[in-house]
Amino acid sequence: MSAPPDASLDSDRRRVVLGIVGGSGFYDVDDPRLGLSDVRRVEVSTPFGPPSAPLSVGRIDRPGRAPLDVVFVPRHGEGHRLLPSEVPYRANVHALRQLGVTHMLSVSAVGSLREEIAPGDFVMVDQFIDRTRHRRDTFFGNGVVAHVQFGEPVCPHLHAVVAACAESAGIRFHRRGTCVVIEGPTFSTRAESELYRHWGADVVGMTALPEARLAREAEIGYALVAMATDYDCWRTDTEEVSVEAVMAVMRSNVSRARALVGDVARALPETTVDLPVPSSLADAIVTQRDRIDEAARRRLELLLGPYL
View 1 (cartoon, one colour):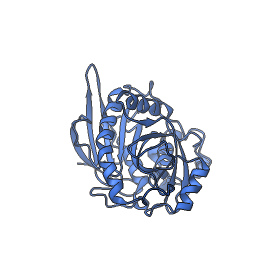
View 2 (view 1 turned 90 degrees about the vertical axis):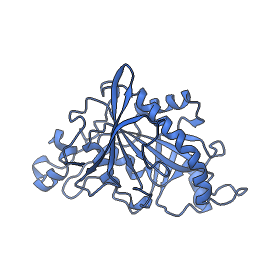
View 3 (view 1 turned 180 degrees about the vertical axis):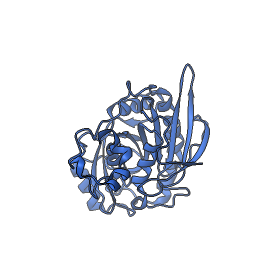
View 4 (view 1 turned 45 degrees about the vertical axis):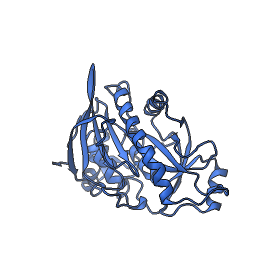
């Protein structure tokens, strides 16, 4: 099924539509604990190229309440083919917005920088430090300048729902945390790992940025569930990080992550009155409206339409 650029599950953004971005090990939504039904694959074209893979669109039934529409994209593509730096972040976020997503729950594997965050723990990240270098990290430029506020990078309302669901499920989790996002694909040096600890970072990952920045520019509420798989390399009493060790912990984490996502979906309110979307662009556009050319207007119509 192919979707035109303006295809949307709810063009006026009044109904909550949940976007899910799956990370390492979380490649599909075929899990009864998630509870997704009527799933169909949708190929979406965007002004920023194709997303990582066709998106899966379905719904989660909620007894006594309206079902929740859900859109899923595997960040690294089908079969985990994309490096962190190769992920088409702009296309992924834009495709989610095209399909009506109002809130975005991202799942990602990370390394722990703190003794108290053990492998297997979940961290509800609420701050980021950007150490990426080679990624297109904004929808703007090429004739349109916008400066979006990013001081509080996650949606506090969605973050609170996720934390409450994790607590109810008995998951060992940390309610807050700072994630330093590195370029990858290699893991950190020990000196870098110690530096990040000195900066106050709690976990280290490779994919949350520019994803979170782009979600803010697209006026999508964003929250991140970071799954700790290892202690990075700052601990000298453990072996260096290996893919085998990471994936072993990841396999046990992913089933819990899918169940948590399902719990979050069933707990979300029905409308954006109760779960607001950010109005990030309302005061962010600097370029004079009459100086925005037609090509830029077409490229950014989905995002800037209400403000032009």
